[in-house]
Length: 534
Image 1 (tube, rainbow, N blue to C red):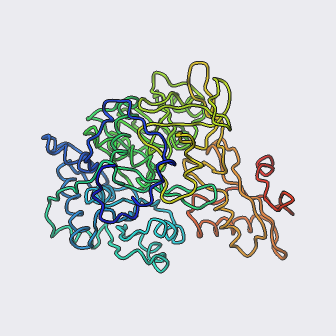
Image 2 (cartoon, one colour):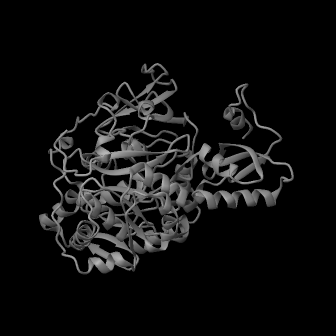
Image 3 (cartoon, one colour):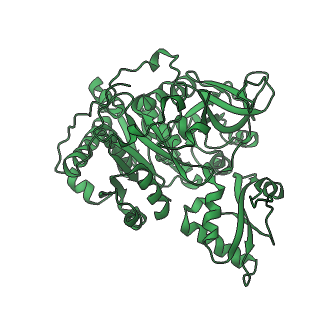
């Protein structure tokens, strides 16, 4: 590892030990990075220095920044972080806000100043935020003023969080107005940590996945270049939050890496995304299969003539959804599987090689295999554990689950796959208790914990139930306490309670009441029997 620029070495000191790291592969010439690299400077400053500062960069409602204007915003925020808040390289800075140009500028400013960006989903509640702040020992936060309440509610449980500054017509903009428009990027090492992205574990305890500056640029050099093949005149748009690495890559890092522009809108539901594509003349769209399915039914009522590439990820793409979208728009979806642990997509197929029901081939720069339970590679046609290695890989923040995800140098994604005769990788199922619904990863035990806080619930078990529209929905099996009766009123009360306790998208869309739950002799819940019942 190159000499670090981090003064605060908390995260670097908590990288997995060398024998728990995956094998890193740098097969492509473009993956040979210099020892010193700041990805924020590479994404923005390099473009301005090349004389492209007047190119369109980030667009939002009422905002249209060129690369030079974005650079000025980023540099002013970096000055506020360093000069006013005392951020030093290596400090973790929490970012909280819906997708917007300002949130993007904040992310780039944190990284340019040598900090570590910790994105959080806008829907997270105080108890979830507190866990993230504590695990990463976050010291600073930049928060959209409209989302201030939950973070404020979390602060009593967050002694490490010393400074919170709000943006969107708040004090951050006021301070930026008095700061210089030039900030020299911190001379970070390529393997200094740039971001920590949190993902829920099957136990509901979030895992912090750490990514180097070189990881961000490696992701840009692989799937976007070899599969997406977008150009500098493209306009990106989509729904995934920037706190989700699918969104961070697809809606910020990837377009900036090629000098393209991106549209960041706070509301990107199917109803809102379709008119936004027409309004901003977007050419590349990123969203989940459930959104494409919903948009296909409405596509005829919108001008989508600018759209030329559509990317589906976040959950398995049903062949029926692929057909619906192509019938509605004439566009073949680019499918892909990635993970927060590896930053972005590592198996995919471009439009020419897409096949219904298959995910695709390993992305150039990555290798993939199907392994049995003993780590032996399986032949085509056999179902096993998906294993991946490449220039990015799992680096959990001080987490014993590192050795579950990384085995014998491979990243084990928790997905069951098989390889067809033509070499395409075909998704089968999740191998753990994670429920992937509507593009979100939802840990069943976390939903169970929320339900058990309600006074009416004696026992519960949560599993995924196949659903035509969303792929999978969260289904809860509930045993009620005496004095409480099952019915629609109880179901609505429990659903609303979960929405108020954890992020609303995690609530059980279906609840079935039982007199008892299946358990082993030692009392362990038999979720496989609940899945059979679902």
